[in-house]
Image (cartoon, rainbow, N blue to C red; front, top):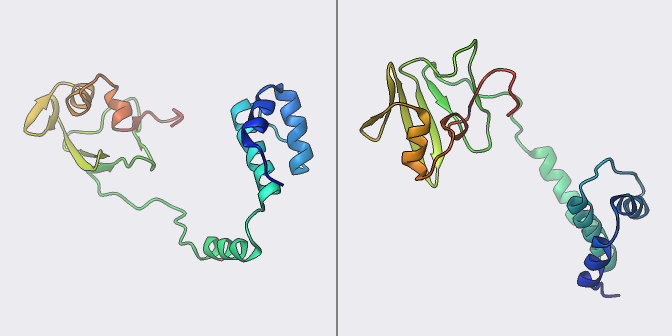
Amino acid sequence: MALDVGHELTALRGLTIGELRHKYVELFGEPTRTGNKVWLIRRLLWRLQALAEGDLSERARQRATELAHDADLRLSLPRASKNVATAPNDGPRLRLAGKHRLPPPGTVLVRPYKGQTLQVRVLDNGFAYDGKTYRSLSAVAKAITGSHCSGHLFFRIHEPGVAS
């Protein structure tokens, strides 16, 4: 039986969140706590498609389980050198102790951006990037991106206790 995804999508969009949650229970056999309509619609469409066209084969499921068990999972962050702060796109954020918002002078902030590795050195009275000195991290971020953005957010520097 072929599933008409467009028809199902239209039907699901017309339901309330309560009705979507009820349909979720019907299809998955367990309740959901989310009230995000877009997520519910996507998840329900995926399940309807899997039921109509078939899910992963048992062999594929077993292989996925094997790969998950064999994965080298790092449970702790590598120790960084004392004066280098790294900030990968999806990795940890640099957290500073005390009330200081900036790393100490001499620290090099490293940030991958559009295929390049950017390095900014913290100075006593500003920041050195690409042979120029800037007064703020935001000025460095603007020079890099071409538009205004928060330097602290761009370089992923957050105060302790702030969610990241």
